[in-house]
Image (cartoon, rainbow, N blue to C red; front, top):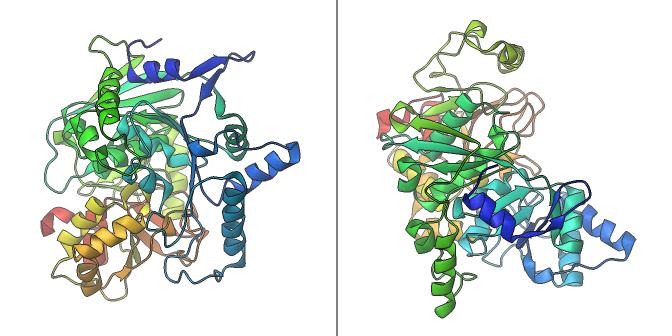
Length: 467
């Protein structure tokens, strides 16, 4: 068992008790909800005559089903409107704060909680969404949960969970120009595997991680789940504190100094014991693109696609399935693969720094004719900030559509969908079959800057040639 890690400290401090099953009953400090996984959970509460135990520890927003073009109510999609109304009614009934459209605080749940200062070190956080691991960037232990668990947290503010092992994932060195946090996590998942983290919490560490901004750290932790880990986290440091200071829900005044002192005490001890340690060299990481149907099927932009013989026997079946689905061949370069749609956004890469990096590539350039390209800011706050900086003007001048905040074409539970066999260059987090709204659509994951480069050329392109 690992000892002295942040994970152990936070777990211990939030343990209510041990259940007969052997699981830990864990107190949840912050519960984030949205319109997709909460309606059934509230219905279950009603069936049992239960109330929300701590409504002040729950925060709601709308993100998955909201359209990113017209926000006129009622929404054109009647089911989306129904889900939105259900969330609004449930929040009113139970006294839960809702960051709704037009509030200035609406956006993707994993974008708005950090930018509002709701996400803080040492917290346990739960949300009915896979990518809740994002919040681990702050030194929180954050879990994606299912609908029945959303019900449990609403009713009891606790979760029944098995304690995880802890793997230290260390990355050292300075990233080369054109290599971003998205490339780091795609590289890690490629080498550790999509099931490599099963049963683990990943503690991301090393000089590369320490040099990252909070938004870059969020990108890394966001996709820990894609490597099979139940959560991923980074120890809080001066970068964390500087990001949080002065945000609406962060501690103020004397409470701030007290909070920072406590946050420092949570850091993993120098002599902590891990269940496993893996080390990577930042110098070996290049701009990375997925070619298959899992986030682990990726290559550097200047590599060719692997032959089946190059892969472990256990991966050959899904690799062949990926080649058949994607219409690609072993041995061909990923560079030059044609794209139809370019999407910048999502809880992985829809923050202001992501938009800035993409805009740097696009400034003074044009989207290739025939390519559909659009940008979806992660929140109303990100959108306003980008517009204040003139980024929207750069995107629109290049030929990108400038949209309203939402999950958009990451999950495509809204009008933003691929059509038929279209190929998407996407800054999102999953490339599963049908993920972006078409049963036959194909997704290539990459950094926002790489998406911008693909939009200019109409094909997978090494962004370094534009920098």
